[in-house]
Amino acid sequence: MNFDLKTLDLAGAVAEKCDLLVLLVPDGFVPGDDGLSVIVAQATKAKDLETKPGKCLQLYQAPGIAARRVVLAGMGKGDARSVRQAFGAVGAVFKNGSVKRAVVCLAGPARPETVAAVVQNVAQASYVYTTTKPKAEARVLGRVVVGVSDTSAVAQSFEHSVAMVVGIEFAREWGNRPANHATPTLLAEAAKSLAKFPGIQCKVMGPTEVSRLGMGAFLAVAKGSGEPLRFIELRYSGAAKTQAPVVLVGKGITFDTGGISIKPAPEMDEMKFDMCGAASVLGVFRALAELQPAINVVGLVPACENMPDGRAIKPGDVVTSMSGQTIEILNTDAEGRLVLCDALTYAARFKPAAVVDIATLTGACVIALGGVRSGLFATDDALADALLKAGDAADDLCWRMPLDDDYAEGLKTHFADVGNVAGRPAGAVTAAKFLQRFVGEYPWAHLDIAGSAWKSGAAKGATGRPVGLLVQYLLGAAKDPAPKARTRKVAARSA
Ligand code: BES
Ligand code: MN
Ligand code: ZN
Image (cartoon, rainbow, N blue to C red; front, side):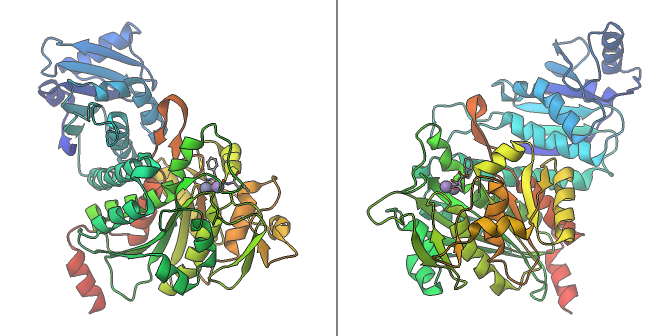
């Protein structure tokens, strides 16, 4: 699917030949004298149309309008949430098999956040998963024109959001694949495929190298599975070597049965999504490949299955992590923190500017925040603020949670330096407190995406979150992402 940004007033939109024209009408819209304005004015007067998001009106082969099909839709204030609500009403039409070429025109002056939201929502509305359902009709929407009265103020936001969409869809694809089609080995292959893009390198380690590094916690989780573990290391180099990278660490449990502390059967299939943190890291690199910003980023993914088996870890087993701290594994279902703790220790070798881990870590976070906001934990206020702001800008929200030391009390045990679980209260926080013990001398943030990474029920599927948040954050860190000027920039900086 290709997106184009085009200067288009309503008179121009009238003449756009396409299968579908969606006109988004904001509050306070002042109609002109073109054909579309006249219809909007008449429909509004007759109360057949409102600018409230969620309200819409469809036309077919309307006289004087080149588009075969037209949808007039209210978009209220034109902020991200209103656009999302508007697409809640009109979105389904983008999946229609007859819509190959669509124009989405913004009536009135367009803001960057509106354009970004339009791009994201068109992609979201037209996405179809087909990998293991070959007979399903794939996306037919091939070209989307976003029409605005003046492109200059929104061009950068448009370019960023198109790249974000590419990254989000990469993350959704890998998130959605069943566990037997997304093994640690296949995930590593997907990461390697990203190394074909400029600036990206990929290194993959197996059980031998991981043992040599002493990642006893990660190895312990993988022990119960016949699938060999993989430790994926991606690097994006867009700036001088001297510039400290941001390190992203993604939980890559390709299936979480719970291990010996086995999970109940209902909804266990959804534990194929337990690698959505890893998928979001891959998605971010896919977006970086598009944008080529002047920053350095490292992506780390400890990937394995959590299975019950004769060789699996047992409750009460004590293992030694890469940090040297011993861990009593009281519940084998609290495996995410075990694979992440060794990756956080490993991250220190990059002397990072910041480390952000992303994990479908706790059911408790789903209870706390649901699917609206991801849980954000951070040791550094500036990093927390940057991530919160990035989430707002990309309409990929998060909410800061506490890290008081008192929450770590329950992790104390007689048999090791730390236990891997505390009691049920504040489960998302105690998980973060466990991780914090392994954080080195760098600003650290943890995103618990257990509620936001996928949807259950009729709309079951990966959301691609928090790729939008992360890309937005990284572009903020880059300040001037200057696509294509990368090589020149690097040279200028190191000179
Ligand atoms: N992957 C799960 C967390 C999860 C559960 C995400 C349900 C989304 C929906 C994680 O590995 C896990 O099992 N966590 C346990 C921790 C507990 C044993 C302390 C949980 O949340 O129940
Ligand atoms: Mn688990
Ligand atoms: Zn898990």
